Length: 201
Image (tube, rainbow, N blue to C red; front, side, top):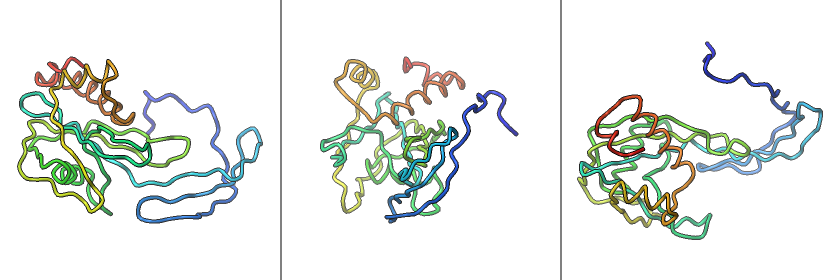
C-alpha cells in the first residue's frame, strides 16, 4: 500500500534498452546502460555504480560525547573524520554488522541500539542506501581489531564541541553522516527521550 504522505512521482522513469557490466568485484560493480529518457532522448552509455548498502552509527557515551573515527580516504586524498561506518558481510543483518563495525573500528560497544532510518547515497549514479543507527551509553570494552588495510584513530568528542565545530567549519564529516544527524533530530523529537532532548538538535 502506498504511503499517502509521500509525494506522487510526476516524471516517468527511463526505459532501459541494454545493460552490460564492465567490472564487478565484492566491493562494487560498474554497469553501463543504454536508456531512453521520457522525452525520447537516448543516452548511451549511462554509467551506474552498484554498491552494497552502507551503515553508520551515532555512538554516544554516558557523558554525552560522540565517538568518531579518523581515517585516510584515498578518494579525497586526505584524512577524514567520520561516524563509525562500514558495510555488512554477505547476508549479515544490518544491526549486527553495525555492532561489529563499531567494536572493530573503535573497541566501543553498547547494549542500547536504535534504528534512525536510511537514505539514498547518490541517486544519479549509485543504487545503494545508507542505514543509520544510534548507540547510547557506549563504552570501550576492547581494543580495535582493524582489517588489513585499515589505519584508524578514535576520537571521543564532547557533543556540543562536535556541533560547534561542524557549524563553524572547523570539522567536516561526510554528507551522508550529516543525514544521520538529521535522522537523529527526528528520532529525538518523536521519542522525547530526555537524554536526546539535551543534545540541542
